[in-house]
Amino acid sequence: EIAVFWFRRDLRVADNHGLFQALKSGKPVLPIFIFDSNILNNLEQEDSRVSFILHEVQKLHAFFEEQGSTLWIYHGKPVEAFKRLMKEYAVAEVFTNQDYEPYARERDKAVFQLLETDGIRLRAFKDQVIFHKNDILKADGTPYTVFTPYSKKWLSNLTEKHCQAFRSEELLGNLLQTRPLKAYHHSDLGFKHGPYEVPPMTIDSALLEAYADNRDFPAVGGTSRLGVHLRFGTLSIRQLTALALKHSSTFLNELIWRNFYMDILWHFPHVADSCFKPAYNFIAWQNSEKDFARWCEGTTGYPLVDAGMRELKATGYMHNRVRMVTASFLCKHLLIDWHWGEAWFAEKLLDFELASNNGGWQWAAGCGCDAAPYFRVFNPALQQQKFDPDFAYIKKWVPEFGSSAYPPPIVDHKKARERAISVYKAALDER
Ligand code: FAD
Image 1 (cartoon, rainbow, N blue to C red):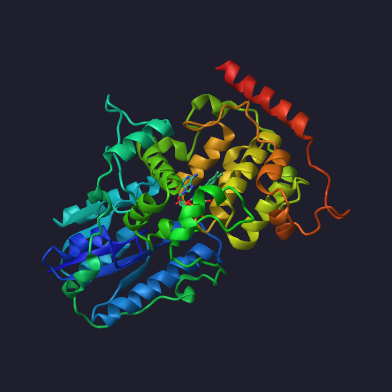
Image 2 (image 1 turned 180 degrees about the horizontal axis):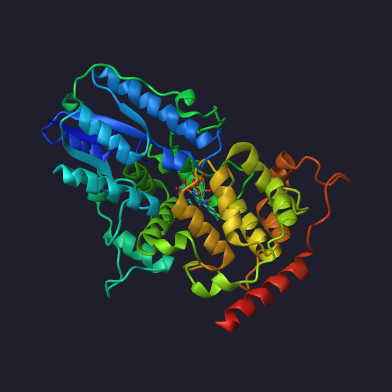
């Protein structure tokens, strides 16, 4: 009889909670990975996230084979994968790490039910966040919906233990020793190589110490660029939190935002499809396809917006300050439904993460928990003056800026601002 460890968004060997528990179970452990066709079938054939995952899975496969074990890989629906696995092996228990997204919860329920019919337990551990589910609640037992009190409670609940590593890497002697199995390549999945540039996973303490001063300036490489590693679990949140505690409370605050949005998605899964504040579902969006295309391409005539949109398209990354400006511009200046922008970011961002992306979009649209009031409309020109004062970021991404080749503004700021406020107001007054 064996134990199985199911990798998902935790693609690392070291300090992996679920893997640690599996390796401690007393049964030889077979690690597995499923390329989930329910997810892959909705993506373009060339997707840099798929390439990133594939590369990490190949690394894990090679690593486990070096250990005399292997990584069992399947491409298809998770329930089918487990049916097959149970035919090939005498599975006693399945270990994994918790995933909080609505689709993941449904998937895990289906796998749980399948395994249960054979008397097999599926055990999921907390790994991608410091706190989850009901760990952080208000005194009356309900979840927080405002960030500042949430973060205070988060900090007061934090102990050294929460950052302690689960030393899975020291228990590898408990892996199942077995014959080699096939590795996977792009062609096995029907995908092409999607180019991506992944920043190194090293965390520089100097960067963290200067983070508070530099983080808002897109021309300065002042942020960690670790989003993708947190997204796919190639880096442990416990390790990063311990570093943040030592070097930068501002950086720690951003990690708390990440945890906050994951908790919001867990407690209020409806946010995945609709506004946290229901009245905002009735905004009379203009939804001009033409304007949307100009926003996507970065030809709105607002240089900070255009620079951000072009950076996103070219690299799969956009600086946080610019994410806020471009998102606000789409919703408020162009009056386009935030879901359109959310979907575009979801397709393009290498660090795309449902909870943070949705939270960021609802914040910008003004319809989320703890969002800015709707009448506060970012002024893209002022944002440029403050955060890219010498046009360094803009010149990099919009080289024709200042020449006749650059388009005039797609909308007048003052008029767009007034229009946004009146359309929002009308939707909210009616409720
Ligand atoms: P750093 O500034 O170095 O921050 C370190 C880590 O903290 C990030 O990697 C991320 O995990 C977390 N973090 C930082 N800021 C936030 C934040 N505001 N909310 C939640 N987590 C945060 N982040 C994503 O990880 N995936 C997304 O799909 C995503 N979409 C966004 C969409 C919009 C409209 C907005 C306004 C923000 C979005 N963010 C998203 C949050 C933030 O912009 C990115 O996490 C950050 O820019 C990633 O770059 P970094 O790793 O250099 O960040």
